[in-house]
Image 1 (tube, one colour):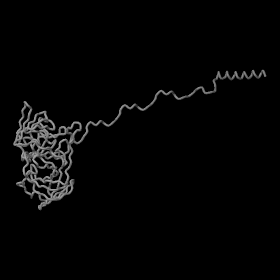
Image 2 (cartoon, helix red, strand yellow; image 1 turned 180 degrees about the vertical axis):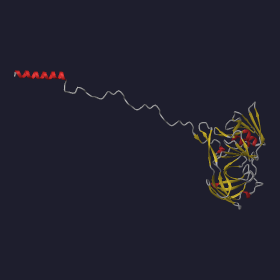
Image 3 (cartoon, helix red, strand yellow; image 1 turned 30 degrees about the vertical axis):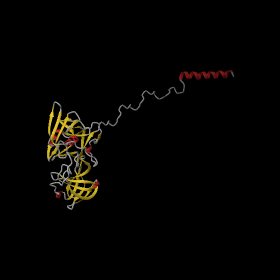
Length: 353
């Protein structure tokens, strides 16, 4: 037993010595993932994209003038241009004016555009007692007074005076929702004398009063009316027009778009005193017609009245000095002299549509 213990210890010692001399049979290297020295990620977002801010807002200009609407129920304000003569005084920079001794407040003070003085159209028309027609689709203004006819277009530098084309140095425009026109051009075209006092900055217009002013007169048949010019089958036509757009924040003019003309129906006027109308928007109507009485259609000598037409209203077919015909509707309003206010509807052309 003693010799066995010795041998066992010797074997154990030999194994230990061998491991020290030759190394262990176990793996001397341990493998692992290399240390992570770089971390990858998405690049930081340094730009944010969005729609550009809207700096311009387009809209139709607000309608702030009573006479400029399209509804037959809207009426112009009464004219203050009465008396044997017209005397109007205006001061630059002030909305206060004087018409025949009566204080009047303009919608806006006179403004200077391209060296020309502009005043509100509504003010000067009423002060002079002029008949006004406003065509909203075309933005066309027609002034009629004492046998004179002036046609203008907003933002157009061409006007027509008694059928003749005239170049304007500055076109009518819109300022803060109010249509303004060149004062000297309107005054001189409607036979007014104009004077300017540089010391007081006052403008004076003086001339004969409009025949549309003053007390009402008893209607009488038009002296030289000729019904034959109205007899026949006609087409109703709304001509092409320009629509202007404005910046909503400043009210200044921006651009215009063109709308093509379109048919508005038909009209048949019989020599026996009857008529039939088929209006695209107002519907159908039939009834009797008669010659317009003197002063019944202000500014025009030749016209017929279609009674009880479409819309349960009277209509007037008016003959212009150049022979063309226009269909106008009764607005339901009257001027201070009792004459009706007619609103232009469409042009009347020969032949059925």
